[in-house]
Amino acid sequence: MSKPDLIKKLKEKNPKLSQSELERIYDIFCNCLEKSLIKGNDIQIRGFGTLFIKKIKEKYSARNPKTGKLIYVPEKNKVRFKASKKLKKFINL
Image (cartoon, rainbow, N blue to C red; front, side):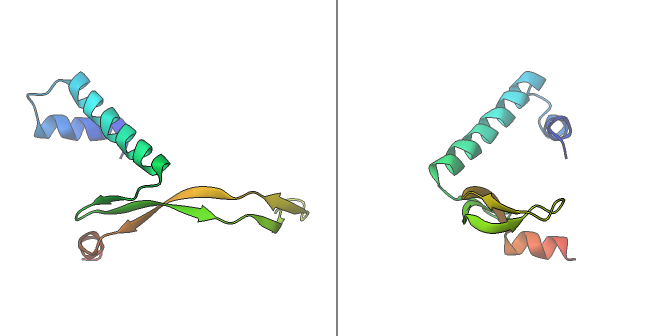
């Protein structure tokens, strides 16, 4: 679902709010998620799941798939998602 689709759904549920207000709410929500993840905090949304940062170790022996040469891959952080039991149950009906 894209941002316009999500805002359209929110508009259907909350017809009193204007399009610009809904876009602002969406932007505030996304900014809060970003800031929390940057600080290293986990984000738990009850009944949906958890977003968290996982540190990926550096690799000295990774290979470039095109050329087959060994390359160095630096350490980095990745965002991971773990679905809640409720979401898993709903998806696997």
